[in-house]
Image (tube, rainbow, N blue to C red; front, side, top):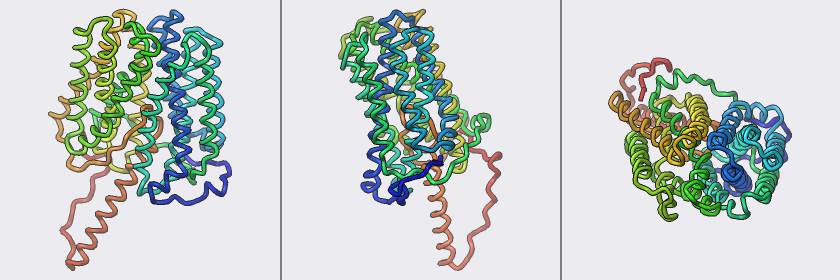
Length: 466
């Protein structure tokens, strides 16, 4: 997504190949992104806790969470167009200004039917902001280090989310200080990003063509799993603070509770990615989903209504380790089953499915908590994880795993664009070119042509379902 605004001379420098040299100009972008994530996660937990203190029902609080993901999904579809029209810097400044104002509107207009509108506006703005940062990072990094830079970006978001959760302890949720703090954090995120010397992409990128029917034909497991993962994570991030509040935790303990879940996901992401490169990715996703379902069932049936804090923290950390890495694993699985030229389109389709699930999850979780109490959230996520496991086992019986695999990349907690997948696409194309060059070199040395190979099947006829 290219900027149409003028660039400073510093931003015109060519990308360099060294990881340490590349980190120097993009560290400001990563810092600004971290501040955005801190403000966003703090706002999410604060609105849930404050809504509970104001007497909002679980369904109303769930709608607030759903509003954010609806806005995020719309922003992921339309935010890139705004960037192409006005440029990266102007788009970032405008969206950040709006996003920093919304927390103050929440404070001024405390109403269960107005807050979802504000959260939808926040979600749209944050989608555009993340698109700008991701495209800047992509343009500032040479292909040799771009995958590592963008994986660092994904992990930075997770750590910033933990810090944002812990800021809930900075002031009482019933007051106004935390709302002002969120506004300040988002505003200050403008400074390092706008002043960054990182290079923006020089050419605009067309939107990838989305074809959900074809995506399902290529990877039925990936399509269903992405939607159900969205249901699980959307419900957890939106209603987890309310769950913690209703089992007797105070605001400080709620912050630790949510931070433990994020830390569990952070700790498990790299090991899960490493393991998925060596076994059938579906087997790993099914194992994690099955373990999460069984753990949630045990928690619902065996854990008392007001468990000790250490037990709550331990259980939610284990839950995060089993659920949060799943989207990155599913995306890697889908990339294994599509051609490199289709990576961006497949990622766009998964984003829509994940966003739809994330929008449904908080609302459905709110309804479940309204009828069943705090355990309703557990029953909803348990059902989603059990469906992932069952569908994965069925698909594994229908189709074997591919022999060749693409690189695993750490996705952000809230993916909004296909920039990260473009990295995998570029790497896959480069590997194919190297393989063709090596084959040509072997032919030249042997002095004879290789045996004829059948022509590649058209994209629509490729039998790579999983």
